[in-house]
Image (cartoon, rainbow, N blue to C red; front, top):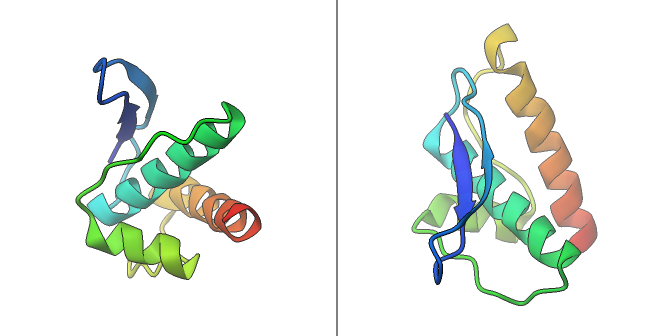
Length: 93
């Protein structure tokens, strides 16, 4: 699994993370949204973030990634990133 943020007007890649082992699309979408929100906050920007993931949007609203992904040694880093992302969302939205 990997994710990236792209400026929709210029098609410029802003960030790219991964690949990560044993992740899911929903986890990637959630992490991408949080990464984008943090980037825009740092830049003091109010540009919109686009995603088609209703699940990731729901997780943002609930401030919790409700994944059923099983934690393994191969995806441990994803769970670390999810914990950091949830903390950021709780403190900044």
